[in-house]
Structures are given as C-alpha cells and as structure tokens.
Image 1 (cartoon, one colour):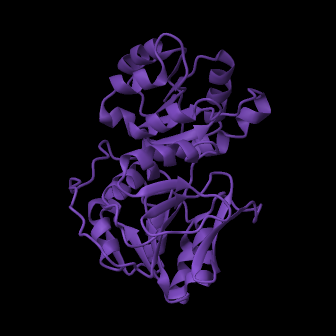
Image 2 (cartoon, rainbow, N blue to C red; image 1 turned 90 degrees about the horizontal axis):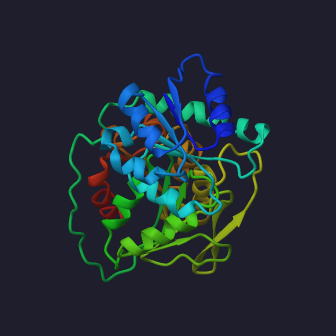
Image 3 (cartoon, rainbow, N blue to C red; image 1 turned 180 degrees about the vertical axis):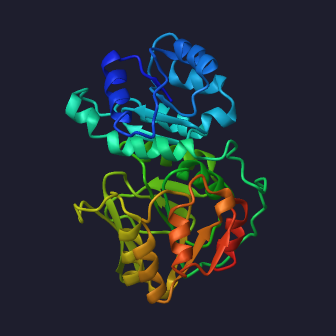
Length: 336
C-alpha cells in the first residue's frame, strides 16, 4: 500500500501504524499529490491512504486523476477541523472510507487511529476489483403520496454509507410519507456538512440531529457524529434525544442505540433498514425492533461495499426481506 501525506511526521506514524499488522506491506510514501500520482503509476498499490490538504496537488486533485476502481481503494486520512467539506466531497468521489486524523500531530494521538486504520485497509484490500453493483443502479420514479404513514424509517450504515445514503435519499420524492432517522459511522465534524450537502441534492429535507428535534414526514435526520441519537415518544410526536451515553459503546452514534430506542417508543411502527457497513452494530437493535413488532430490511450483498452489518442481521433471521440498493426504495415504500 501507499501512504500519501505532506507531513513527514504523519507519513512516518501512519506507516508505522500500518506495519503493526503482518498482513500489510507499505510499498512507498508520497509527499504531495503529484508525487502520489507518480508513485501510484509506478507501484500500483492495492490500497492508498490519502491526505486531502497538500501543496502542488491536493487530495481531490489526486482522486480526479484516478479511475473509479482506484478511488474505491482509497482511505482518506483527514482532519475534520477546516476540512469537513473537502472530506465530504472526497466521500462523494467514491473513496472506500474516511479516518479522522487528530488535529494535534502527537505520536500518541496518531497511534490512537492505528487499529481503525489497519482494519479499514485490510477490508479495502479484499474488496472486488470493481465495486459497481451486480445490477446497475436505476432511478425509479417514486409514487406520489397524499397520506401520512404511521411508520418511522430507521437506517443504520457504516463503510460505504455516505454513497449509499445519497443514492437512497435522492430516490425519495418531497412528499415521502414518513420521517427518517439515520445513524452513519463517520468521524465527528462531518455529519453537518454531509447533511447540508444531501439537503441540497435531495427532494426531501436532510438535517443533522439535535436534541429536541421533532420528527416530521419527508425529513431525514442524520445523527451527529460523536453523539448517540435516541427517539422518544412525546404525546403524539416523536422527539430526538442526543447524549453521550453509553460511553462504552464501540460506535458513537450507535445503530443499536437508535434501534433500541425506536423499539421502545415506536413498537410495530418501526421500519429499520440495515445497509452496507463492517461489524455488527445494529444486530442487537434489530432484535429489539423485531421483538416489539417492527420490521427490519437488509441491503443485499451484491450492492454492499462491505457486507458485514446486513449479513449478521440476515443470518440471525431478523430480516423480513433484502434488496439491492436500487430496489431498496421500493422495498421501503411498500411497507409504509
């Protein structure tokens, strides 16, 4: 693999962090975008870690010069402070994932990301050489609605989630009949710009979750990265609650926390969707939703970037149906 960063110190620490795994060989490093393109052409690395803000040619310039297949094996290592918008633009280019680089370039701080970075590099390396779904994406014209659904759509996703969410939410018309609550595993600082970008691209409204927000039909709420999001019943309304508990959760926000709260507050009105992502976040929550009378859908393996989260839910017998990404809108709408 190739490490690209304009900081010599960051290149050194990222390289040393990756070499903690015997499965990873770092074939080279690059100091800026031009150097990166030369090294990519010469070394043909399986995976690339890419800084975004660099002299001569920045990370977005590098991505523009790569093929879709190459971009699908890029892991962006970037700081949220001042770089969140460019990070969201990089995710829109089809990179594999994004890892947050601490603002303070201290050895201890950078080494804190080693485990996450190693795991994502290993996953990117084993992805198929093409990440294009087996069935091409087809934008279906959604039906018009003049009624309010009693259900609430809950979405949980991780690796590959920004691209999948973009495609899914763009397929919904402005009169989508139900509220949508979303948990995406993404570093802090990125959900606000992501929600803003999706809001400008989608017919439905997309916002970042905040405490006390009331769910409304045709509005998608994305949980703020770094905070858990719960749903609570308040009279006839469903209200968003945001906090740090539980502190010990592997992910914050956690899909399990959102789903479990929906099971309590919504019962059979909950319609959960587990999409592309690594790990098993969402499994316990899916059990809670099913036990409360709600339903769970899963994304099919053929369209997932990483078939982890949907797989464990399906194998547990909790998914009532699975659908490829382009068929998921119809699968959701048919159950509202």
